[in-house]
Amino acid sequence: MSGPLSGVKIVEFEAIGPCPFCGMLLSDLGADVIRLDGPRSRSGGGAQDVTGRGRRSISLDLKNPEDHETCLKLLDKAEGLIEGYRPGVLEKLGLGPDVVLTRNPKLVYGRMTGWGQFGPLAKAAGHDLNYIALTGALWASGRKDSPPAPPLNLIGDYGGGALFLALGLLAGILHARATGEGQVIDAAMTDGAASLTAMFWGMRAGGFWQDSRDANLLDGGAHFYDCYETADGKWISIGAIEPQFYALLLEKAAITDEAFLTQYDRKAWPDLSIKLAEIFKAKTRDQWCALLEGTDVCFAPVLDWQEAATHPHNVARQTFIEIEGVMQPAPAPRFSKTPGSVSSIAPKPGEHHAAILKDWGVS
Image 1 (tube, rainbow, N blue to C red):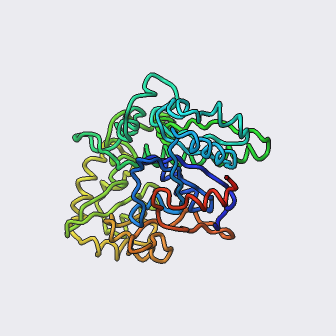
Image 2 (image 1 turned 120 degrees about the horizontal axis):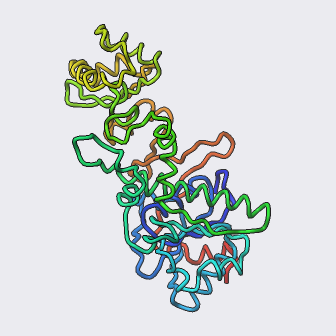
Image 3 (image 1 turned 90 degrees about the vertical axis):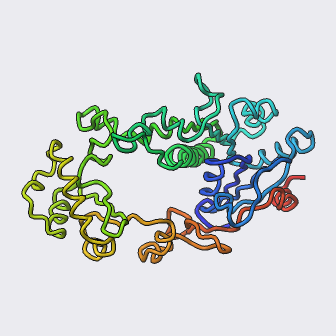
């Protein structure tokens, strides 16, 4: 394995959503992540299982005494654990922190849930949409005359969930290496999603954010921070927040209407949005790209999946890579001396059973 996390051993209990994505992030950066698949594993493996890439898999029936002991022996060797069951499930299997950390005090026990390990909703079912709804993040998404718009499952599952769990695991491992003390990471998607909204709470307290959708600086309320349709039915994005960037937008788009000169007059925003929409509707997306892309206007075309993968900037940076015919995001972030890489496609359940036991020194 290559990457800055080379030599870090992680055990990942099979799950869906944020747990596999967290495992992918760590594996992309060089960690040896092994996935524990149960006898009824839903993972089919293969190149299309993008978030399952870079792992090896061992198949264990945790209700079988011998497999249970094998699992404990693997955890004895690990620095980190990833699990996404409801609170109390692993405790019932005899694999809770009280057991595992007694055997391996340096282990960082990462727990991924939607609602957290405690609280009135802790044991209830839920999905990304529910978790971000509870934090206010969903309410603030979308237009004022429409229902809140589900922003894919990026804010709860992946932003507030997987990324916070990965951060917690790495911070915990650093602490354990320095002190010899492991600990439990309670990564709740509600907590993470709430943390992602920190700036807006500050803006709200300062009177710069209203409790209304489509009325604020960054939610589509401002005419200079929004998406607009072009003559060919495609879309562009404008983010000219700073005055100098806004002035350049007016110059490049040949806007001479004096009404646009009062950039931060909130009362004028709705009318200016209508006027700007008419201006952008007069040219095709490609024409606006030729005029604005690469300038300080803060502009980008709104691309579909195929267009994103073939855009010159993303091609130059190899932001997307193709593995066995499947286009997918490349490892991120980038390291100058220890670059990350995708070591393999997603494994089939139990594919590396014998090799894992040998490499990790487990009989």
